[in-house]
Image 1 (cartoon, rainbow, N blue to C red):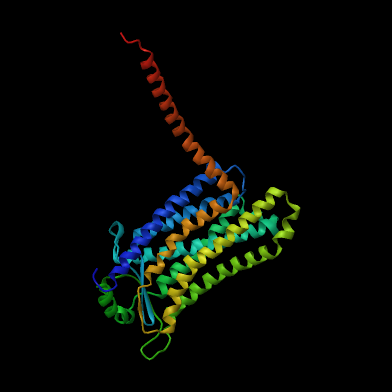
Image 2: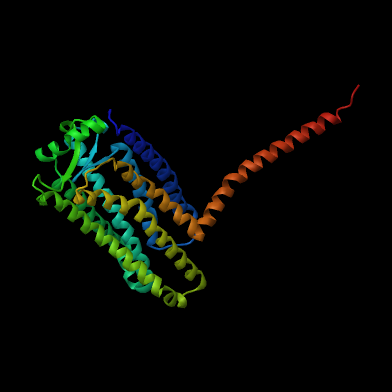
Length: 348
């Protein structure tokens, strides 16, 4: 790949690699602490505390397998990959990019489910029944539905056609040295040459807007209701439960801010920019890589804010250090004993 923007692609791959490494380490730590070290029983919320970081690892893995990229040219964007993982063909990689969109929207939907759980835990505790046992799969189906809606709409409405190929081909050759005919991906071109709206392509933007607005509206609603009414509601609870609810609320607030920066804002920039028909070329794939940084951030937010996890980290650290310290002190004691014995040997 040669072109004036090829350097940005290399930067994007470096960010994706960093995101994968950090997500794997941080999310694995959170899963380990949740299953083996945290003593408090969080009830069915434990499912979310394990599922979400596991999903983060999978999402980051998919990122480095596909290395997806985005390029904006005037009234268009192309979402593509030059990778051919596992020997997949061009069309198979395009479908894999659609699956990437499915996992992205599934992740965002599961985030809104976490907010709904915390809201119900405070204001509608009887509704937590829907998170227990087989009913937990309701939320898997919920998130899968919106994930499918996003991913399928991406591939269906933004299929590369002759007009979109001709629209972006020259810029892709000049900026990246890529022949669009060999490209795996999807493309949105918002307007025709006479500035009419290409509604089939724009339906992709409307579809994504619907998915994102449903999840973000649910997140904002639950967050605002908890902020306004949580203190009065939790007064009837024990002191330890009040502290725990406040800690989880702080966690969710940070979990709202961090995905706004790393998940929502980059996606909105990518899907809405073509509608303004600005005469610019932008390698916006570098923003796409912010997605992979989110899982690690989310895991560290939970560990940092919730006291039970901080205790578990200290306990784990102590469990690791104690044997090493014992081995070192035992070795030092043995050396002193040997020196003492050698000094006690009579000289003749």
